[in-house]
Length: 318
Image (cartoon, rainbow, N blue to C red):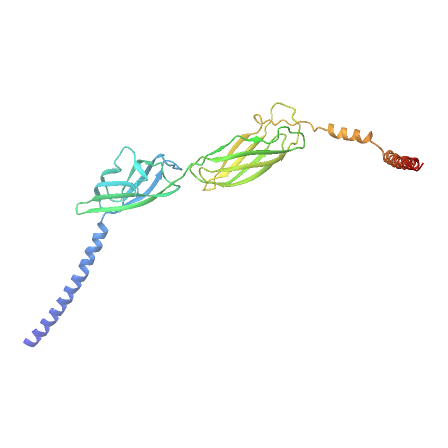
């Protein structure tokens, strides 16, 4: 009887030991999973900017939503919006927003006005949205990052465009000269210039890329195609260029006097004079006659000279 009880006792002890092991191994895991399930997590669900393009010195508004992804509510939320190196400065605020409560699986919409400092380059800058909040059991922190693209303004100034020729006649070549100055903060690309109009031929030239503060030269050779007969003409030089995103810009400059280039009729008077000189000029026969007369004169000159010399010698011997 004692042996049976001893065996039973050993089995009971073994079973209890196994149960204790399972309890110590599984129960913490269950509590851990349950704790994770009820831990409130606040995340950035979406955001938008008040403008499509932000330039240095601009003020803009960021609108964003924070969502409590857990079923438990949170309270005393502090949201801080900041850039890493102060590229964006809060306008009329400390950069923090306070929310008293966000219920489980709900979201709140927030906004903040920011100003981009003036000395930014053309690239995207990191903006952090950090949150601190709590529930009845603990305090928590979270952080989300978004990127704000900053562009630089493209702006050109075209120096006074002039025509090299003082007098232009129908069919003459015309040289158009000007300078493009990049007075914006960004590089401009694929700069081209094209002339067109009522009494000049279409022509163009490729300038290339121009860095900020630099300039490019325009030198176009075109041709006068029609005589000026009215007071109003529309002769222009159109300049096209692109920014870093491939957006195209155009600048238009009028030629001459508000687009009018004075083109005169072709002057044929010199050709007529040449023809007249040719028609009244010496013929080949006449030229030959002059040559023969000159030869005869030379022969007579030497004959007379020889005769006079001979007479002089005869007188000396006499």
